[in-house]
Image 1 (cartoon, rainbow, N blue to C red):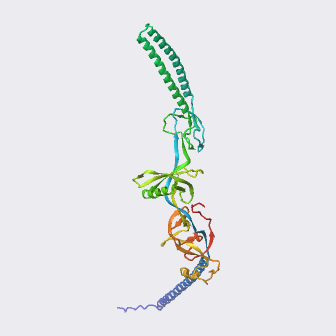
Image 2: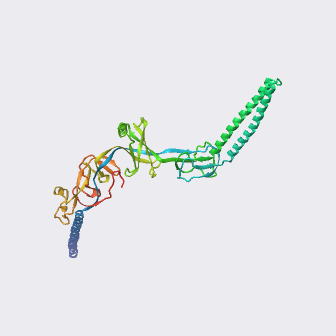
Image 3: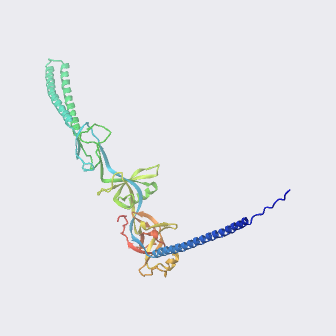
Length: 443
């Protein structure tokens, strides 16, 4: 048996393995170094960007603070103390004082339409003409029948007289004499019937000319020349509404009726009623209270009242909705402010009163440090104006104004009416006077 030979690993193979180990360790270190370098660069970029963003943000904040330190432009109006009406308010509907729907009372063809839609017409003015020829012929026929019956009446009367003479002479019987008298009486009745027929024919002929029964305004016409109309048809020919004067119907709660009645008795003249537009800011017309309805609506607990307006400028239209103010009395020396000056907050209603001079020191705590005196951009000029927040209580609206219940405001003070959303108590402002608004709500 021969000895087995031991196989030894070759030296070259071992050396190659060592080379691979060395290269793997060296490559891993290089990769780690590259990753670390990239992370450092990224971190440096992020830090650089953050510093630049903070600087930009601080620049924007400085600009905003500089703008905030400038006076806020606002519009102002004056507080007024004046005599104002004490009134009850309600919603009303304008109603034509008289409304007439014209219908034909005879049948026929329309020949003429003598009005323009929307035209003002007077009572008795001819509006439409229906073909009168059939009714003229009927009248002529009735006149002819009357003439015929009148001639027959004369003959019957003569016959009755002759038979009366013959009866008295004993020639004819009493029965014959009475028959002739009866014939004369029938002829007399025919005359009366003919005269009635003539009157009826004249009436129908007059109905061919349709005139306005009132003074008013003509609406949109429903028929044109050439149309055939019939007596009693449901569709009217035209509607006429009387708007001079015009009425307004409104309702008040039954609890307010005694107050109205006392005012009517104490004043000795009709109460003044004012009609305002939908926004309750513009006075449309002024009229007087005509009457209170004779019963209360049990379903709503309200009563209807009717007011009359001259409406000379045609500011009110039939079926128009208006805000009604029934004036009961006058309040002297009332504080009146524009409604636009009143704001509402958590503490209730308030206004901004404009006062001369910079912001008082007691109100500087409401402002950030950047707006304190001595900071860049904060003006300390003696021509400054600031605003003071003052709480108020509104009694009732009056057109575009409001009447206050307390006397915290004085006559002639300036109130901010536009720009309040940019203000806080003590803000510096640049006021500009707004066009004044009267207590009635009209500019």
